[in-house]
Length: 583
Image 1 (spheres, rainbow, N blue to C red):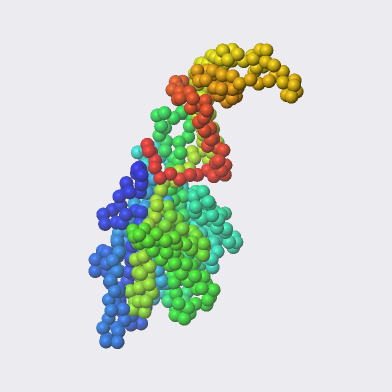
Image 2 (cartoon, helix red, strand yellow; image 1 turned 90 degrees about the vertical axis):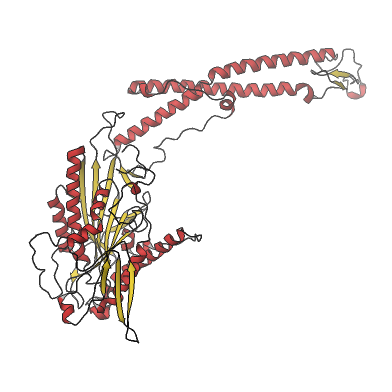
């Protein structure tokens, strides 16, 4: 798996593909349908090469057609079949990246009748004349991006299990966004599902969707067929089999590595990578006066969500352009304005790999819709994502990881206490030195008082009594010699004779306090070591500690280490990591 500061840059895509930290865009132009040709429609879209799309707009007042040229990373003309489109899209690499723990999203966008559903699933599609698609010699010739990517996914999982002993668990959900509400396509209860926000990962998710564990390729194909069958569809003037909702098929892939790390205990469970593949088939944008659909509410909801998606793409594109310029203004990305953009937030400017498939119709009547689709696709390919690998705890309940985290904290606590307890002996020596200095200072003060003729009461013997002072002895001017031999006239001020004594007293008091604290830490460390010995992990506690400065620890102890469990959300089991050394 890729490692390094930006892991997604260590896994290069196929030749000619865009960097994985930007949204990759593929443009596909479908062939002209028989019904369109019967109505006299002509083709206005062509792909002269694998990266260029040309659209010939209606003639202007001079009778000349206007040709607009769009440059993309990948472009597929109407002559390319499903297998060639799949190879050009790089969806196979997306499956490989999902098995490394990356989230990946493949999204089809375009106007109604542009071939989005056929490109994505290829199931039960019909041509514009109402007849079935002509059978091919290869039964899977019409398979779209979804079934082909799933085939690649199961083939890669089988290879990884055979070579490296890795186990994979795949959970599938299939939902649709209809009238700004989310419904489960695998559990038809008729009740909308809630869309909630997870602050830890900063992403939206559908709550309560039915998850189906897929143990084989046939299981996931059955899920795809069931969801496609239950999806809301209708017929109107522009499309006989029009999707009236946005569908989202999500495959959660849990990767269990059977290899045990050399320094890990046999009972420990290694973290698991969690990849995700999301396939999004959007409903097509349409104009009510042209489609003449029976439900204006459906059309309004579809256009509202697609309009919000277009706003998100525009804002993210402007942010990407300003990233390279001096203008660093803050922008608001309107993810919350629509249910669809909430669920696509991870793919647009988020932490997922993203493939944007822009499907266009070659018919002249759809030239304006085709131009709009290509314009937004051009802006979408400048959006920058931040793909990262998702990691989850090895045991489902998180008990093993909690015990290991608590054990790690106890080891760090023992290390901290031993570091502080190692200062007991230096502090004891410092207390003895300060006590000796204090005694010498007191002796020097007494000697200075005796030399000045000052008794314990602070006066000379035989001093006369002053009757005006209430019977106290009269203070006589005299010369006093301090400890350093400086002569002072009159009574020595208290600050001169006792300053050094008070300083040593304060210093001794602080040192004795630090000594008592260190002795308490030493006792706590011994008690904790005994507890670890009972747990059988004492051999992992480092024995040798190099202490720091004695005075530094005496007057400023290092900050207390916090337990990783003290600020951890117990309900949050997952975390994300963009650097995976050794995996």
